[in-house]
Length: 400
Image 1 (cartoon, helix red, strand yellow):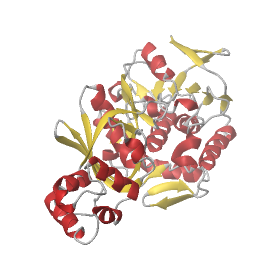
Image 2: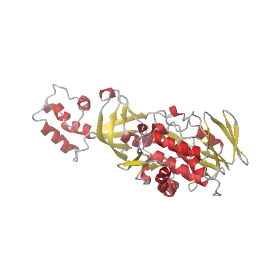
Image 3: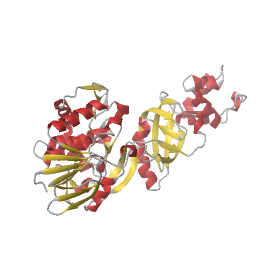
Image 4: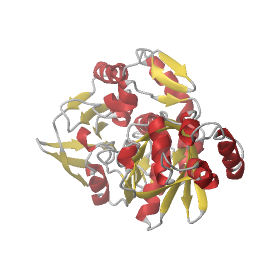
């Protein structure tokens, strides 16, 4: 079969290698080179897989179909990269190339595809796809005919890499639906106007996402304080839920525990703070476990000044501020800052055993285009590899 893959990112390149064993494959890529976004992953180090592949690390409206995909492909990813010559190193369950460079992964994918006679059509933008007996792909340069298509255009995230959501429009015109697409793995803005006072602080915290006085999710890790709000992996892992809640009109609040090492309640912490301040100023007490800039910021909010006497300090309020700082969410940052998106083509509309569309025969859908997003830690690339391997190996099978 003549197969055209639209998108030369992680899922598209993987699908091309799997597919080229049996078919003639072309990749259409809008950028001058493939894998532009892949080079940015993990700050250029490319955390390409995670040992823990439980479904809790993935998010979709159809967990049943998602689990089918995971069950089918989880065990094939590491052998696939070994076959490409990638030597992996594992750190706390996270897999990286031994070179510690994303370019190693990209080179392994592109050079393998080239050896398998995959044709690369770069600097080419797909304008329209028409389907009769075969597919007609109208691009910015010329028109192509294909027996099958693998749509691997990515989402709207990280727009500087060329991701503009075009794949959603192509899929819609072919009859697919789109679950609202929102930024995920992205920074979160707060409602206060004084965040410049804590800008630059990095500290270990526990974050609790609250919606309607109900705990939605808890994350721990290093918090990065910014002049607009908060960032860091623990924040990214809450951001998809935050974006969805805001989109539905729900007020979002994150409680920040700046002293997660203290295991008791606020009353006990207040007593501890008071005892520690018997022989020294409260600012010195806070300096013992908080970044000084953060300590000063919290004292300012608690209205504790240099000349405030100890008997005037409400230690319970201060303890509450430290253990449950109320971060009121304004919004997330946008698609240009997001690593991935939530939403996309529903998994209901594909066969999870082949990634083939249930609406259009010989159309396969993979990667970020689908309603699947993962936590930080190699999960989004993981889904790209898995969906690409399944689709590429199943093209031409009569599955529907």
